Length: 199
Image (cartoon, rainbow, N blue to C red):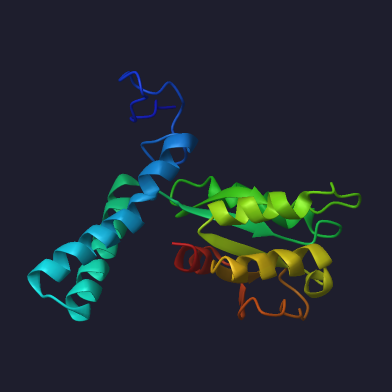
């Protein structure tokens, strides 16, 4: 695997291995990805200078954000996804989606997943909120009982509080499944759907 292209404080190159198809490791990919907001702010400032007023600010921010997304694609950076699933019944769905995230043409990378176990840690909610805050998308893997899984319901609530994009994927081919409340419409699990929804 390739070495991260970022430089550390001493000026030397980072020794970590790259993450996915990125040119950066897990530490530096978040720093470079955080440039979206910075690019939008810079665009807003420039837009206001060119065309003073709210219109210039909005146009400039949109241009900066689009430029940042274009750079993300050009550098191979993937969307960071938190996977929410019914821990007691659907662990294999989590393993499957992690496997798909490792495919060469995958536009997403699973950064964290549900922490709620049969005997959860007292601070699992705090850890889940931190993990969700680091993600760009929360992916809910829908199984037969997911819509009533307390951990999933809390994770969806956290994602909504943090204004994260939420996507529901039905984890199995056969059967009728109930969508998790407040998590949007459920989609069938296909590679095309994943690539469109998580890009």
